[in-house]
Amino acid sequence: MTELQSADKMPRSFSLPLIGNTIEVIVKQELFYLQQYQKHGNIFQVSFPAVMGYGKVACLVGPAANKLVLKDQADKLSSRIGNKALEPIVSNDLVLLQDGEEHRANRKLILPVFHHQVIAAYFDTIQDVVTETVTNWGTQSTINLNAEMRKLTLAIAVRTFLGSNKTEEIDRISNYYTTLINSLNGMIKWDVPFTLYGRGQAARRKIVEYVREIIQERITLGNINESKDVIGLLMSIVDEDGQKFTETQIINQAIGFLFAAHETTSSLMSWLMFELGNRPEWRHKLREEQQQVLGSEPLKLQHLRQLPQMSNVLKEGERLYPPASALSRAVVEDIEYAGYKIPAGWYVAVFPALTHQLPEIYREPDLFDPDRFSPPREEDKQQPFSLIGFGGGVHGCLGIEFANMEMKIILSTLLQHYDWTVNPTTAEISPVRRPFTMQNKLQATFVSLAQNPDFTDSKNLKTDTKKSFRDSASV
Image (tube, rainbow, N blue to C red; front, side, top):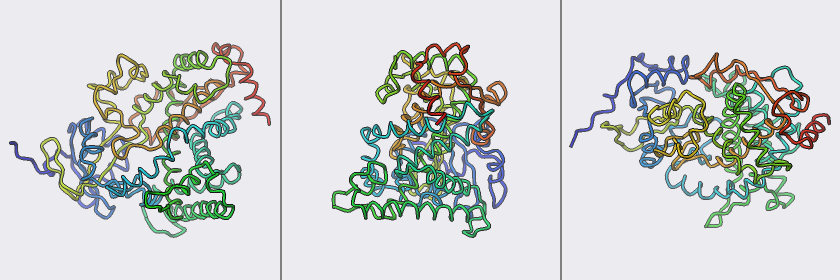
């Protein structure tokens, strides 16, 4: 039997005393881990200062590592400690930040919130928000894709999760939430008004106050069971012992769901629009598929299940631009991997983007090729845990079905009514190695198909659908 090596023997690059690799990570972001992988291979270590709440990190790459961390050894790892950086936003009440039996029990309790029948009931609401939001995109010279996608997905989340349909309320909560998200970049964690972190926490308290008012109003009106949004469902949940979530737990879950729902889909949708904006052949393919499925009907829920090419486009977006750059866990009980003993007190991290770029899994990994997910290729199914843009295993994303429905509605609506281009182009920045750094630079120009009779695909779109969209834009 081969003796295990100490984790300290893992390959590593030079790091500074006390601060470790912090400066390199701040400067290079995702690119730092790619360079470490290129230099050291599928396993390497990095370090961060203890004052930041972290320490030594074992970085593991590949499907086998993903399976180990996300499934096989999950009970020896802590998602709560590994994601402590998110605590200023979501608190420990969020299922994502729970471990062991507590996590299993609460995940089971919350599953009905994301049941496919419940999610299906959001279809009309999401479609309404999308239509209202994008009607003026064709009248603007350019839009910042990431900023507009964040506004759109957050408006969807506020409407479906909190039940608000008042524009001024949605705008107000969106502004609070943007301030809260931006506060994660604050280095000084003092809850005072002159720090970025303090302004974020003040915004969070405003969101808490707003959600608490919603809860109290529904209790007063006695219509809890009539509310079909996430707040209403959380208020209605009763466990096997007859216990309900407390008000604080409901508020924290709702804020956490808002974070998860809009941050992941807005980033992914921005990059999908970038890829499609530079690939007219794929916009044409998707429009043809829509025409074959919809015929003369407006978009309906059942149509979304009949769009395999669009599903593959979403998967390819997830592969190239995964919503999370790293999935981190704290080691609470020693684990073994690749001949190394990783002791309690360390951290482990797996990297979706690095796995998704492995040529032994994905042929020509830098190429945008949604057909790789079609039979007989199905490259993601050759090894388990090869596609982990939304995580996997015991902490797999609860809202993945919601996210896929939302993204299909957005993409279907835009394809029906617009053509678009995006700058910078794929020729200028692909392959994109730092998507989270680059996404704010994406600028899109939308052209209404209804006002562009020379566009080759416009004849395939339904006049009545275009007319209704045009009419709604003029209201």
